[in-house]
Image (cartoon, rainbow, N blue to C red; front, side, top):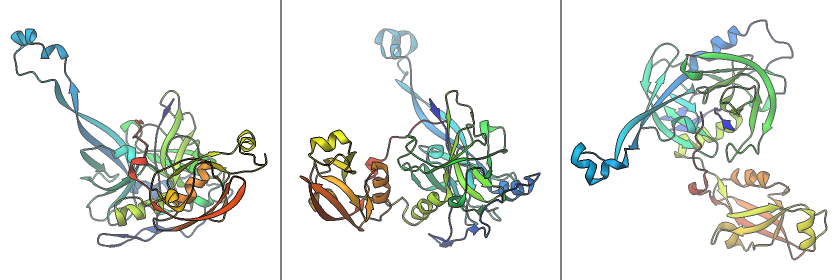
Length: 371
């Protein structure tokens, strides 16, 4: 099973030279009936969608027989066990501000030694990486060019199933391409693509090279960054995923300001409480929560007094029924924030206050190879 990728949304962001100026629409999304043509929406959004070409130097092993002294007598002693090769890849991106900030996917630029950005108007320029977040697959580049076209931001949180969307990018390197579809679902998660997921699902065709490109509404306003496809063949089958701009906005702000995404972390792992586990712990079978199965030594939860075997029933005033929801609640707090926990220990209720630390970078997943 193969997957593919893209993402975003911001407002006023702080950066090296002052506030980032981005454009935000005053409209709340498309109406119930669409126009005969979406050419106006494309003309509004397409100039701000760029193609991204990356290159990296990798070591390639040569034939191990060349290290054998016998063969070296005939082929010389200058042979090395490896040689260098340049690998290239392509993706897409979106110009977010007149200061030259470009939003794309982490997997598009991860490990690249050089990055070249190509604009629709024919200009091209080298880009530098401002920061990248593997756990949401978001990356921010910066380019230095005058008179940059800037995307207008839409309201991804107001998108409804059935709303018309357009995907703009550079699939297979054929040149800028626009595909058309609808929002198939919102809030898709637990797909195993990223650590933090809240995807817009669409049937607009997304193919290799679309990653990092724009998903726009019928008015041409950015609502998502195309980031992945569900496919067994590597081609589009009408199930594509985009990171909503509402999620990308916060990540981009943090990357521009701090160079990385800042997330809270408590340092425990939990397993959802099943009726069987509840019975083994002598709890009511209807009890909902997470069993604390492990703690990071000297992590925030450990220091606060949480113990393995405790049952987490509430966090920050919310019910703790789902492990992914608990992860999102914790990561939504900044380091240093107070996070109260509601626990059961040996069947008795217990409240513990914890102070979030910064989520370690080592917890980020290994980079997935995606088309």
